[in-house]
Amino acid sequence: MRVPLHLALLVAVLSTTNASAQDTWVDEDGVRHTSRVPPPAPDHFWGTGQWFDPHGLYLSLGGTVGSAWTSGEGAVQGVHGGGQLSLTYEWFPWGLGGYVDATYADATGHTRVSAGAQFLFAMLGVDLGYVAALDDAGTTHGLQYSIFVTFGFLGAQFRQCVLFDERDELEGTFFVKVPFEIFAKFRGWGFWFAGWH
Image (cartoon, rainbow, N blue to C red; front, side, top):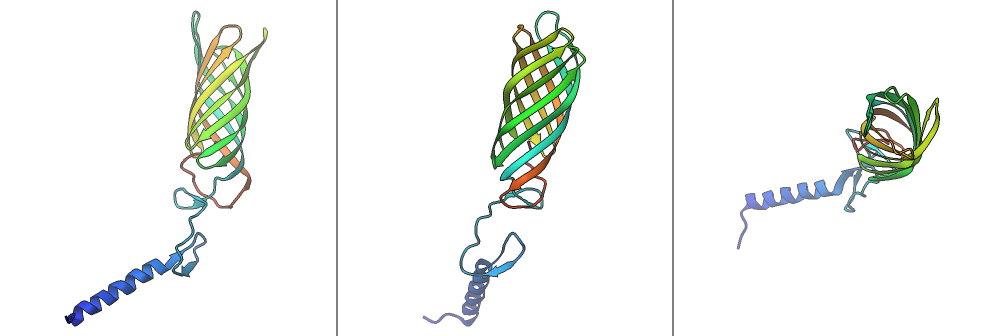
């Protein structure tokens, strides 16, 4: 059976095009390679236009502002503001570290200081730790937890403090945090849409 010449030429062109598409690839540094070996899987996470590697140790500094209120009889509500520092090791999508923060709430009239562990998964995070409420009457100790979500430099957080004098204090917070890379497996930059913590 004879194959028409135009069909044979079409098959040859398509085969060459397909081979070229498979044999030529560009690595993360923009270098074009020609090989039948498939390109290596990158160790980076794709953000919005730039390669950025979140696998490393980061120190983050930030400020917080939001609403604070107490529960139960004689409940009060007001605003609060403060700052936070965290040190986390992140290997996307996981992260583990610690934090310390302080904030003043006008509703309760005291400064709250807390420190503890921080657990991260992509955009989500959980804090667990010790809390102390400082005012003119002295220091009240307790435990606290918070859950938060981040998007780049911005985030929102809900925190509940269970003080040992049987008071519960709650906070709804917006925060801005800037990460500083201490070390990373690969260097790069970009807006990591899954969040810095």
